Length: 110
Image 1 (tube, helix red, strand yellow):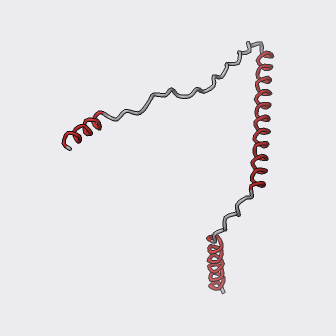
Image 2 (tube, one colour; image 1 turned 180 degrees about the vertical axis):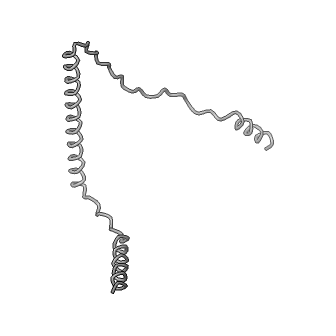
Image 3 (cartoon, helix red, strand yellow; image 1 turned 120 degrees about the vertical axis):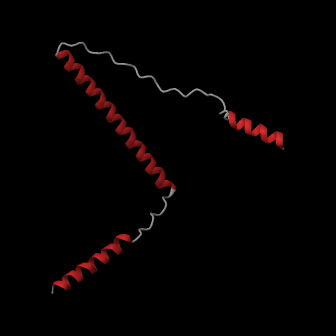
C-alpha cells in the first residue's frame, strides 16, 4: 500500500513537471489603436505619479522647515540643482602610438 502511494506521488510529480515545462505561446500583437491607447494611458499614469511625487516632496520639505522653526533652529536655504550639461566634444579618438607606427611600417614594406 505504501509503495502505491509513492508511485502515485512520483507519477503526479512527473505530470506536474511536464505541465510546468509547457511553453506558453506569445500574446498576439496589438493593433495600432489599442497600442496608442495603451501608450496614452501609460503616459497619463506616469504624469500622475510624477505629480504625486512632487506633492509628497513639497509636503516633506514644509514639514521639515516647520519642525526646524519649532525647535528654534535656522531653516537652511534650498540649494539650486544645476541641470546636467552635455559632455564636451573632444573630437575624434586618436589611435595609439604603437598602432600608428605599425601602420607606417606596413606602408613602407608594401
